[in-house]
Image 1 (spheres, helix red, strand yellow):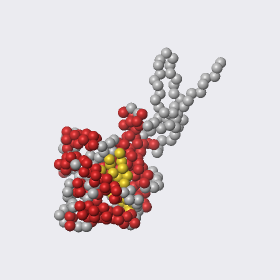
Image 2 (cartoon, one colour):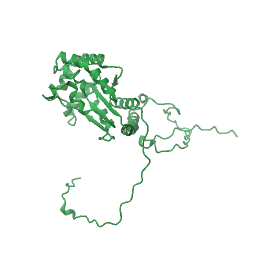
Image 3 (cartoon, helix red, strand yellow):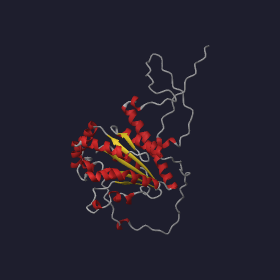
Image 4 (spheres, helix red, strand yellow):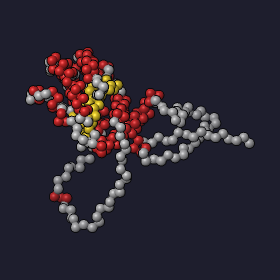
Length: 316
């Protein structure tokens, strides 16, 4: 009798990012051969060891892949947070870009599972009349991190080179002074021990229009759209010129600009988070599993009658 051919091992089952660190690798089961007389579906999976590009996946599989990858990266962000705290690092991350470029979306995913005492978001409103009389960078200084902190600026001192300049909220002299002072201000921050990362989210004209239309028609997003956003849309070319000059003056060796292609929200989030994790070397300080102690079994405590308390109506 002829010997049966040895079957090739199948790919291991997919594991969620949350369980990836727990599950031990096992021996994968061999796939069942196609039954005679029936057409077997073509196996679209990559061979073992090969990576499948998300572009070659179906829409459903691509979304699933992005969700798993985001979960994996968010676990790494928690590890980075603990490293920042343990080492007393001071981290500043700046997020800039056109309106509806996705800055808020990536900030939300970064902070989703982090400790707000360690990682905080700064999104300043328009300067007050008093702040307008101060040294331009002064109102940002109080929000800079102390040891063991990471601060995410949802727009920053670069407002002067962007919205303030395009909308005429500052003079040409003030813009020129900003371009002269900003590089040295950032070098000064870095000499003081601050790690500074600057991201520019680049969105196309067509994609911005699509997102603006979504905000107009979605009641949950309408608050995001302001008259200033609509005016910035009209002045697209002016913003482009302002951005180009801003890069020319402030893309310095010590603190370069990193451009994120933001036409795909999910790709932009993953690419930015992955770059952030790679930019700050860290070690895994995850503590050993803790054992939950039992509560005391005997106690003299007696709970007061619940009729003495006011409860939220149980509508649901």
